Image (cartoon, rainbow over all chains, first blue to last red; front, side, top):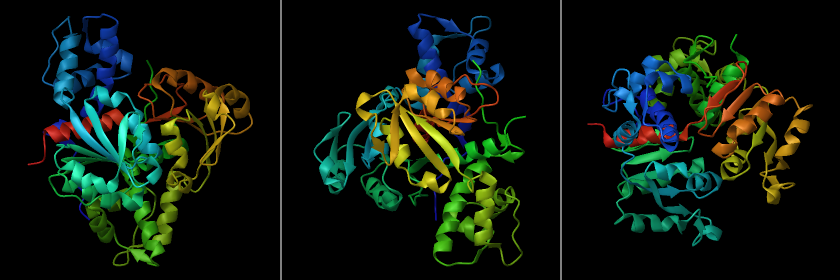
Length: 217
Length: 217
């Protein structure tokens, strides 16, 4: 079974650094709201419980460098992170599976801040068709192919039951999505040029369980 | 701000290996359903698109070793993984925030397979109080402290809005939870002996966005 994985690095940038950028971004936006102008690595590190050297390394992947004794201009840093992540552009998405997890994602306001525009949701449940969930229209899954043709959809969000995951992924691939955000536990078979980011809730619970069994000394 | 992080290793076991164990477990249970008796690392690796040497290393953390030319007895391997993760015992949980994300977690059948027993959910929404979501009773958040006292709750699951996250975490800590499964974007301040596993959906979307900007060649 092939799985298009996201590697430990993307274009030489370590994935853990990329994963921390939204945390910095959130904090920087808070500072901006409080009318602050600049910030140092040390302050960011102290506030977020990280090492200063790690913060500097993480931020450097966006191409920005701080100035000695001044630090970073907050608006420049926000812009650099958003540009690096592609969050200064709109990412158009279809969501397949409008159950409670799908509804949660449609209702999560943070994603629109990241440029994510969920254009339509799809389901097979007759009672949902023609309704809107958090403002997003729900269509029958049979309409996905037709609707996807002229919509330039970048990403498919998969929130279907495990048994429907591969079929739904195939439909999304057929309308030309370049990435799949997979919330199901299924390892999907995808063409090599389709990127898959897999949210593995069971992996997260495994880490928690294991840590509970082996608590910090 | 202090953040109880789960480190890159737990008791010398690499976190990425721990995170892969549920994937193996799911596959092994499939094999068992098909009445297969034993399985080799090579077969697991081929089916799950991994390197055989990595599979062997991951499985070794559970304390089990395969036999040359025979591989692993499937039932022994399932038992070893479940025991290692603590999934052979019941983990009792309170869930705080019975919105759509909370409902999705209450409805996710996989978690009960991992021994997770969500004893009660809490919310402030009057319309939900006294109802059940996927069989789990919903109480007012004000009842959490009283209800938590004699229930031996291991874990708190946080699915509240960001603005309520720290307050809800404090309540959970006050009733003696040893771990918090944090689905909010907030870095929580927690006592050092409370473990926090943070599901960062924005980090996951950052990786996907970044990979879309830099597609594999």
